[in-house]
Length: 100
Length: 362
Image 1 (cartoon, rainbow over the protein chains, first blue to last red):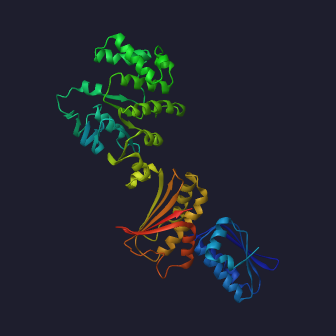
Image 2: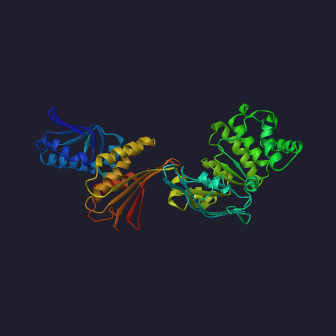
Image 3: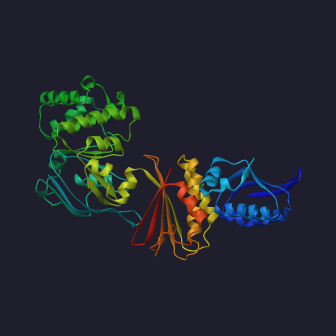
């Protein structure tokens, strides 16, 4: 599992590549630390190369969302495979996020 | 007709190691029954068949044929084998004799029939197996299916009370299996008593009046084809007839190798051509492990896939527990939603080992 953060056109973009499961969640949480200070910049969670997400990954996404709201930022999800779309749907996460 | 009691057979290898192939076989076979013997390889099916006509002498036990113990010292072995015909996987025809001579040899030598009489009967039996026009052919001129039908005619020519078939179609090309099975089926309709060791499940189901499922050196389950194939009572029978493949994990503590587990699940799903189920299965396993991570009790996991109906399921046993982790008040809601969302059906039951949850997958 690899996570890259970059800033582009005034937005913070987190690019995920691999499987975000229990084992990968601890390192991914550290990799996502730069998003904590979004300071009004919108955040894009790029899931085009994300193969799998477990509840551990969903919790990380939820933390990012809560923190962003406090700072007046929006969080968008870009590109999801069918499995991740299913997980979002069955957990109600589809209603929490905006999608690109 | 035949009663087998406490039959055992132990082979001793050249270095003195003992291998008990038959552990305690008990059964009764009545006249007119057609019994297929099925089961995993190496479980003693062929050995059991070969002990019945004493091609292998049992280590202990009794075989009573028509009221007489054939293991007693004075029992006439030749008479036994005349009445108990055997058809082998590898045909065992005499290559230097014509088809008709293969069929007539034993009746002339052992029953004292004249050549004329033996040939008259032999042609009838060859006609019965559909090979009357091949009576002058040599075995080398025949296909595998034709050779096996000659072998059946040769057995019939001895007027056996019972025929033992030891994997009669295993050595044949798939195109020739049907012609041999057809002959056996016609014998079944004539109420010939037969014991058939076979791996052909469809054939066993169609031809048999009874099925012996052999497992671990014994007859593990005995029933009609409807019972054995439709409603098997025991776990190993069910696994066998449903062609169930398993991946098992036993987790004793929290330091288990999660990476290795997900890798094994991936390989299992790819091996059985169900890559699309890899993520759903992994979701259920991972979220269940999340729910159970608060507890110290060992966990047993079985992921199964049926090659017969392509169904898959996951069995979780939380040892020493009585409450389903899905029903606990403090269960993580996200994990529970994913588990329920990924499963077609969830069954919970209490077993001697602990609470068992079975997840039926889409």
